[in-house]
Image (cartoon, rainbow, N blue to C red; front, side):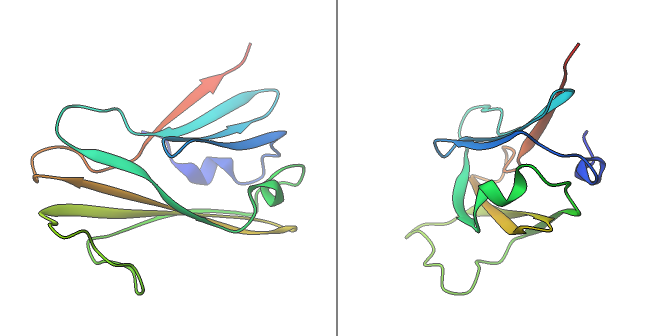
Length: 123
């Protein structure tokens, strides 16, 4: 389990969204990959990015937070049928700006609706 607060103080050379499935934070020493390891009958994806990911490049991260909610955000129309779901919000800031990455996970309640984070140390 990765505590994203360890990203505070790090400067990333690249922050990129790969379709609706992954977000990569990369520098010379480490990469952090936000994704969902698919099990079976669940869906977890990036629903929205509020802010400019380029604001997270070239300046140290000053804030890294994670919040989850089982309540639909204001202004978001839920799907017609919604059995079990989790919203996960990742909030990052640098002196250049603030970005919130919103993930949506849904399942029948048995499978994980969470976002996974993999840390890849570079040699």
